[in-house]
Picture 1 (cartoon, rainbow, N blue to C red):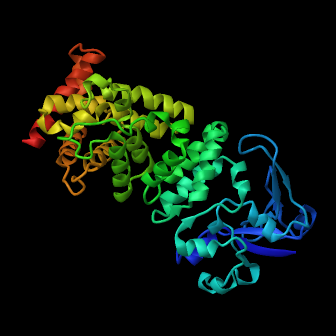
Picture 2: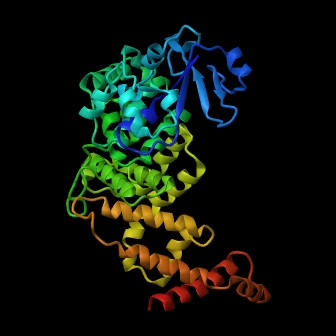
Picture 3: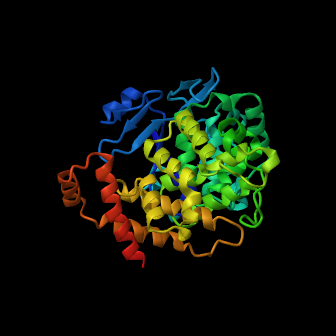
Length: 417
C-alpha cells in the first residue's frame, strides 16, 4: 500500500501559498484492508475513508468511465491495480494532478518541491500560469467547466489554455452544461464569487458559452448601454463585473456579492427604444433575480438581501436628497429596524455599486454613513412605552405603527440636523 498527498495541497506548495487541507490517495489497497487498519468508510459513490487519528479523508486510487450525461454519469473502478498515474489522469487540470509521497507529507511544504510526482506537466503550467486540462476525459464532466472558471477567478493572473477553452466550448455546444444540477452550479458559483477576482469566473463562462446556458439573465447584459454621464464604462455587463470586483476588493461577505451580481439584471430587458435609460429596471431586476434564485436554489439569506438591493439601490444612491420623513420610509421598506445587520449589508452592496464604475473606484460614498446614522437614530427610540401610550389613546394596529414612525422620524431629524 502506498499513500500520497495529491491535488490542491501540492499545487499551493508549488505556488508558495499556505497548505491547509490535504487530500490523500491510497494505491494498492482495498476497502477491507483500509477498515482493518482502523479507517472509517464514509464515501457513497466511491471508496473514501477517514483516518483513525487525524480524521482526514483518504480515497482509494480509482478510474472513472463515462456512462451517461451529467456529472453523476460515471462508472467508478477502485481496485488495487489502479496506479497513481491513472488516478491523476482523471483530475481536471494539470496543476491539480501532482502528488507527493506520504513520507514527505508532514515535512514543510517547501521540502515537497524536489520530490513531486508530476506526470502531466503541472509544474510547467504553473510556471507558465496556464490552466490546462489533463486529458480528453475532461469533457466527460460538465462540472469542470465551472471549476476552471472558478480557478480562473482564484488565480486571476492565470490564463485558460486555448485547447482547454476550445474543449469547454465543445462541451457547451454538445449540451453537457444543460445537465448540471442546480445545487452544484450554485456551489461552484458561490466559491467563485468569494474569490480574489470574481469577474474572471464570468469572463471564462462567457468565453465558452456556458454563461448563456447557466445565467442567461446575466449574459444578456453585455452590450446593453447605460448613460455615460452616470456610467463612464457604458456597457452594463462591464459595470456588473466592476461592481463584483469592488465587492471582492472590500472583502464583502457572500450575500453582498450575490446582491452585487444580481442588482441590475432588469437592465437586460429594457426596451431598445428607451436606451440608454433604464426606467423601472429595479422592479424587473427583482423579478428576474427571484427566478434565478429559485432555479439555482440560492440560500434565503442571499436572496432576501439581493431583493432589497435590487429594489432600493437607486433610492439609496439618491438618499442625500431625502428629508427625515422620506428616510424613515426608506428604512421601513428595507426593514432596517427589524433586520439592522442586513441593512448594513444593503449599504455595503450599494457602495460597491457606486464605486464599481469607471473612474469612481476611489470615490467616497457618504450616503452609507448618513443612512447608518438615520438607522441608529430610529433604533434609539424606545418603542414599548410609545406603543402602550398609543394603545391607551385608542389607537390600534397600523395607527400605532404610524405613531412610532413619527417619533422615529423626529429622532432622525434631530440626529442629522
